[in-house]
Length: 140
Ligand SMILES: *[C@@H]1O[C@H](CO)[C@@H](O)[C@H](O)[C@H]1NC(C)=O
Ligand SMILES: *[C@@H]1O[C@H](CO)[C@@H](O)[C@H](O)[C@H]1NC(C)=O
Image 1: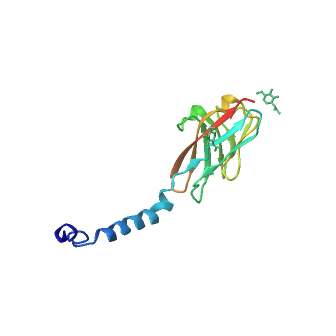
Image 2: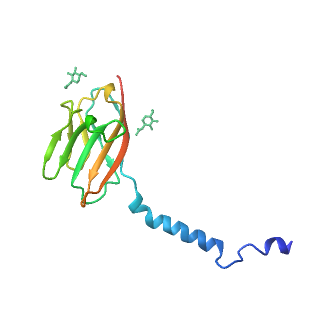
Image 3: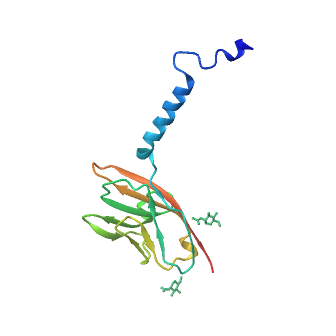
């Protein structure tokens, strides 16, 4: 009986200290790895919807919104740059506007607006981050 329980906890570094160190590392690295995302949203047809973003990094220089799950310029809705201002893209339907906090306002949504959306945020030193989220629009 003694020989079964004796080895537990022996060794150069106790296993529970290793676990604690690993969980502290995870905890402290969380803020930098928090993934940019679009808050998934449900709406009914005819509503004005705001697609909000989560885990926005600091010092954003510009936002670019797309329909679909990729940053394909053909599907760009609009961009907002601190210097360039608001520019519509090929997928702009006349109902969308990027707010100063980066969220996307879509007026009078239809079921055709249902789908995945992509946002790219532009940061200093030519860095950027990408995030995704879903809008569901239900008919009345
Ligand atoms: C949207 O609706 C779906 C299906 O009813 C539900 O599972 C989901 O939790 C809803 N999401 C939000 C953000 O309300
Ligand atoms: C909303 O869109 C529908 C078509 O999808 C249109 O018939 C209606 O006039 C629009 N409403 C407003 C307030 O723009």
